Amino acid sequence: MTVETKLALTEQDVRSYSTVKQEPSWFAEYRVQAFQAAENLPMPKPDKTKIDNWNFTKFPVHTVESDIFASLADLPDEVKAIVTENQKSIYIQRNNTPAFLQISDELKDQGVVFTDIFTAVREHGELVQKYFMTNGVKTDEHKLASLHAALLNGGVFVYVPKNVELVEPIQVVFLHDNDQASLFNHTIVVADKNSSVTYVENYLSTVPEGHGVINIVSEVLAKDNARITFGAVDVLAKGLTTYVNRRGIADRSARIDWALGLMNDGYTISENITHLIGEGSYGDTKMVTVGRGKQKQNFTTKIIHWGKHSEGYILKHGVMKDEASSIFNGVGKIEHGATKANAVQESRILMLNEKARGDANPILLIDEDDVTAGHAASVGRVDPLQLYYLMSRGISKQNAERLVVHGFLAPVVNALPIESVKKQLAEVIERKVR
Image 1 (tube, rainbow, N blue to C red):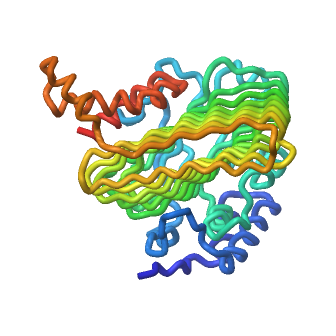
Image 2 (image 1 turned 135 degrees about the vertical axis):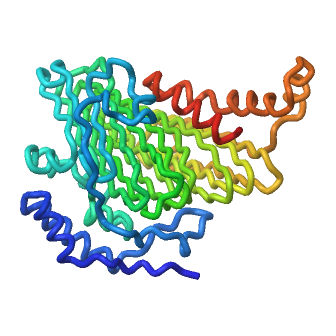
Image 3 (image 1 turned 120 degrees about the vertical axis):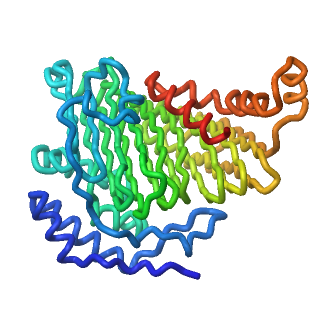
């Protein structure tokens, strides 16, 4: 069976929503053009995963209006648990409503722009227009990219000016607490020349099952000699079909570090691509996931080397239990002219049950001679010798298995840049493998 991809929304619905949001004409027209283009564009085709019967386009409502939070004290306990104590700069979106924003005086004094995407479009239009789907993700890539641009209903914009190095992290929480809500969220993080920022976002469902769809695009742009650390923990409910496209562009001597905990309970397509454009650019991607139930997931991680002396590293660890299945596609691509580039990747999947499935596909595509490249991949079950050793020390089989899983996933968990988020990810892992 193939799911019908025709939308219930019309072009007039898109125009009306843009008017309600008081968007400038250039953005309103951008939406409409993207909506028109979507009709004739194909769906994405993730390698080794058939998504013809996955629902990416049918949802109950386009937006859900929710109450805002007057202060951090008003946050639900689930959100309080992942907000670092004394967090100075934080944005919280509740379903499709900008619900709370707190910016430190330091960020304000340094000229940092940190706000929801709607305010950014209205008040910082020139900056948004420069970076919104221009160099990162393009609207004409496929149907889901164009629909994202047309139906965007949330997100955040971060701009760090030249020569500004932020010590404190920026945290964003996308709270999904209405089972009818769909998220078409767009994140833009720009670090201008010689600047640095640590950005961490959390997607958190507090409903047991959702009936909407999730279409997320993140564009992470590091200018010359800039550094961006991008951390994310996605914990979205069962029933939500999720498409995530996180894209990075690193210019000369720039660095992008990704630390991604992808813990959704629904069907998920996740694509993370980093373009190392400039000479001496650096990209490091660490990703961890746990699949359970009957969910199907596809994770494609790609680093493309364009610049000389560029370095790209991929580390992906996943655990599958019950009847869950997952595809790990890791791609290191070295373009012609990227001499002295170094592409390294490692993908490992641990299966806890007979019916769980994992497939790790390391791919190296090299169009230059003077380079270094390597890959490693493994798919297997819990090592019985490890279990035997732990059990011989008086640990039960169940607890021994838990310890092995936590140790297997630790290289990514430990890379997350905010302690409270690291703790949250560890707790999610514990809950999912219990």
